[in-house]
Length: 223
Image (tube, rainbow, N blue to C red; front, side):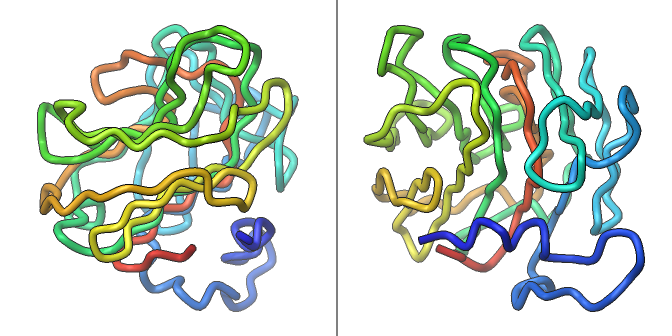
C-alpha cells in the first residue's frame, strides 16, 4: 500500500523543520498547491517556477492537505515548468504522483505529461471515454505503441491518489495505494524536458477539477 500521507509530510510547510521524506534529495518537484484562493502562483518546494495557462489557479474548495489545491476548468488550463535535466528520466527509475478530484466525467484528460514537442516521454491520463466505468489510468508513449491501462475505474467527485513508477523497465500504475496496472517501458527518455500538469503538453486533454500535492521523484521508484 502507498503511504498516502507522506506527500503532505514530505517537506515542511510554514514553520520550518527537517524533511521526513527519505528520498527528498531525489525530489525534482513538489507542489503543495497551497496559497490564497484565486492565486495564480504555484510554489514549488524545490524552487522551480511553474507558469499557469488559462484559468489555472489556487482554490480552497477541494484539497487533500494544506487547505487548497490547484483548480483546472477543463478548457485550456495547465501549469508547466521550464525544461530541465531534473525532469529528464533517461533510462532510470522515477515516480510521478499526486491527488486529484475529478469534477464529473469529462472524457480523456492528462494529469501529467512530459512529451514536449515529441521528446521521448510519457503521458499519464484518464482514458476510455465518458461512459460508466470507462475512465481508467493510462500510461502511454509518444506514438501510443506503449499503453498500460489500469484495471479500476477512476472515482468521480472525490479525491483520489494517483501514481506512476518505473523500476528498471517495469512501469506500475497505482490508484489509492493499490497497484492497478503494470507493463514495460525500456526506452531512454529525453534528457531534458518541460513537464505539464493538468493537460497534455500541447494543451489538449485538459483536466477539469482539482489537483493537489504533486511530487516528481527522479531516480527512485517509490512504490
